[in-house]
Length: 264
Ligand SMILES: Cc1cc2nc3c(=O)[nH]c(=O)nc-3n(C[C@H](O)[C@H](O)[C@H](O)COP(=O)(O)OP(=O)(O)OC[C@H]3O[C@@H](n4cnc5c(N)ncnc54)[C@H](O)[C@@H]3O)c2cc1C
Image (cartoon, rainbow, N blue to C red):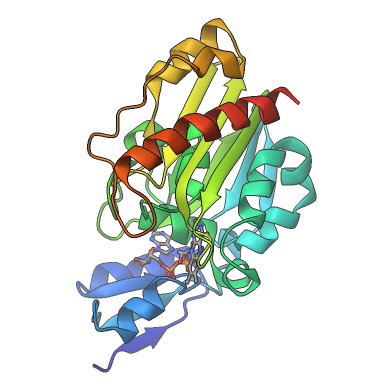
């Protein structure tokens, strides 16, 4: 099906195009959207490419936060000196997404907007208690990821940046699908002045916090604190790669590994 293609140079222009065309879709790295178009799973009549909007790029450090532009690719996040110094766990996570081709095109904003249940960034955004910045408002991570491929974004809302607090210590561990790199299970453990946060991706329909682990780690930040926690597999994904029970087991093992890494 034919579609019109626009590459606006500014955010207001992009928003104007989005509002003017009901059936329009934003294009970032295209790593998810282009295969979806090729398979005819989506057939927008207008494609709005965010690639020329300079304000969506770059990394800024201010007031205890690192703000990363939505169009920063995974490769750029992995290699950026400020992110590597201030939130090394985030740089490491980005460097283990997919393969070099995906890291060269895929973007932070595209991944977060997509809310793929097996994606890595949602665990970092939720675990690190980040703020999703759009052209209209700021959304806290706890209220952003609603379901599989569903977020709090409203129609015509564009993610402009993600603001990550500089955490005390954090680590992300994943058990990756060997073909794609997507998380069969992934756990982000964060210890900061705000407390402990444990975010889990890959195992259910949407990223979520494991509050029982957070409470246990709050009392004793050590892998041993998680030994007696029985992770329920109810509602967990089941596919050719892993059963719900196996995923539940992975969550505990990966959380323990992440605690060790965060201690180090
Ligand atoms: C082979 C392969 C392996 C992969 N492996 C992994 C992996 O290991 N881990 C992982 O986490 N991910 C993985 N991915 C996903 C990839 O990393 C991208 O993050 C993902 O495809 C989305 O980012 P994108 O920039 O390509 O977005 P696009 O495909 O361009 O867009 C995705 C969706 O987000 C919307 N969107 C894009 N930008 C914005 C914005 N700024 N504001 C609002 N909406 C927006 C688009 O309209 C679209 O609906 C893999 C992808 C492929 C193809």
